[in-house]
Image (tube, rainbow, N blue to C red; front, top):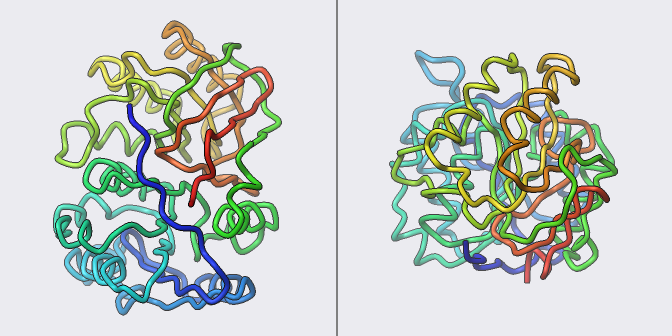
Length: 307
């Protein structure tokens, strides 16, 4: 797996567009997130359809075509330096194939931030644009507006990425060891759902795979992992980082599942790495060469996430 193109870091005064590719956005949380971004001396602009609601399916932030148009317009606007997702939920898979990837490639690289349902866009940006993206807190996410750690780590990644080349989780090793590879991953359910689609990468070979999820019963996590294993998607993965599993079944039960499904790969597996649907979530760049030390709970990037 090769490293991807790193976008330029942000500077004070940078314009950042906020888009809603997935679920409906609570206006109060959006305004709180915009206040945080303004406090960083950024110039946030809200895409036209961010506060829309789909007429039939209330789990979508407006029509598929409108959500796609907002993302594409923001990306292709030369005045915009970064695109931040407002929240996850569900909906990216309905709109991702409506994007004009040639036009977006021609617009050049810029920063892209999101997680959860946005996993499908992380995959698409990697395969279609060859671009490093940031798996991190979203502008209208409750975990972002309430957490100083989440804010501080994202801000450092955006403005001073050399200061966060080493990401220390404080977690433990399910399987000890060290490994080198290129970071990738996201929400486990979305990675499994993305298999076989036009924007999915063929496998995680050569990668340091970051996995997390929320609100899933153990048998469903088992199903997703088993699907990835049966599809050969985990063949020659170099290491695994396990993030948060908020509102999943008890920690011991989930841990036993990971030991059962991932313990025989055999590669280092780091637990409790502190990214995903958790308070104080760390920002993890995808597409960057790095070294994982599972016992130390540490990921060291070869280069800063952004230029």
